[in-house]
Length: 197
Length: 201
Image 1 (spheres, each protein chain N blue to C red):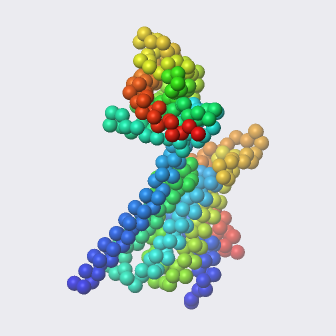
Image 2 (cartoon, rainbow over the protein chains, first blue to last red):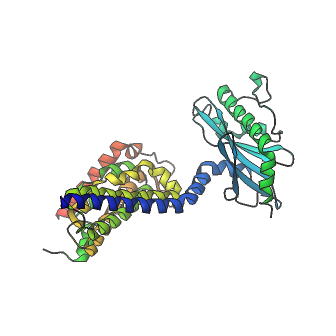
Image 3 (cartoon, rainbow over the protein chains, first blue to last red):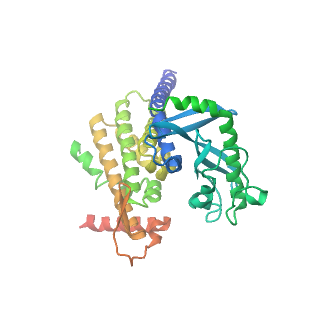
C-alpha cells in the first residue's frame, strides 16, 4: 500500500513540476516565437510591400479585432511619418485559402503593394500569384475601396492565364481587405499616431 | 571494472557511438541527415535532452519507484524535448521548420530512454552527465558525418550556417539517390562497414 502511494505521489509531483516549467518557458518565449513566425512566414511579403521604410514593421505592429477575428497591422514609417500599414486578408482560391498581404497608404487610401503570403494553389499555374509579381502589381496605386474583380467577371483585373479561380481568390481577398480597411480606418489612424517619431 | 569520468565521456565518441555501434535512434539518423546543418541541429537538440534527462534521472534515482520508472523517465524526457522545441522555435526558426516533426520525436528516441534506463538510473550525477554528453556528442558527430556524405554526393554542396558551399565544378551531376531514404540506408551501411574495418585492426 505504501509503495502504491509513493508511486502516485512521485508521478504527480513530477508531472506538476514538468507542467509548471513548460508553462513558464512557453510564457517567456511566446512573444519571440510569434516574432519568428511572422518574420519567416509573412516577413518577406511585408518587407517587399513596405520597402524603404525606416522601421522594422514586424516589431511595430498592433492588433484590432474585426468580425470576431484579430487582425495584425504592420506599420511602415516613411520620412519619419507612420502613414502606411500592411495587413493580411484571406480569399478562397483553387486549392484552399489564399493569404494576401495588402499595404495601404492612409493619407490617400491608396494601395502601395500587394503580396501573397500563404497558398496551396497548383504549382506552376496558380502559384504564379505569389512568384510572378506582375499579377499582384495590378493592384498597386489603386484606391483600396469597393470590390475587386477579374475581367471575366466584369472587373478591372487581368487574371493569370489558366488560373482564373486563383485570381478570383486574390480579388476576393482584396475586396475583403477593402471592407476591413473602410470599417477600421479611424482606429488604424488612431493607432498609427503612436508610431510617428 | 569501473571506468573513469573521462572514459565514460569518450566511450560515446567511438566505442558506443549511438547510430553506428549501438544502432539506436535510426529514425532521426535516416530522416534528417540530408544536409550537414540538419544533422548537427538534430544532434545538438538530442544532446541537450540527453544530458538534462541523464542528470535529472540520476538525481532522482532514489526517489523514483522501480515500478513506474519508465513513466517517470518519459515525463522527464518529454519535458526537456518540449523545452528544446520551444527554444528552437524562438531562436532558430528556419532550422525548426526543416527538422519539423523530428524534434518532438526525440521523446521516443531509444538512445535517450536507453541511457536513462541503462546508465543514469544506476549511477551518480557526474558519471551520468559525462555519459550523456559523450553519447550526445557522438550522435551529433555521426549525424554530421552522415549528413556531410549524403549532401556532398546528393546535392554537391555543404551547408554550414545556412550558406551552401559548392564543392564540385559546374559539370557535377547530383547523385540524388543519396538524399532519398534508400540512400540513407546504403550510406549508413557503408559507414558502419568502414568503422568496423578500422576498428578491427
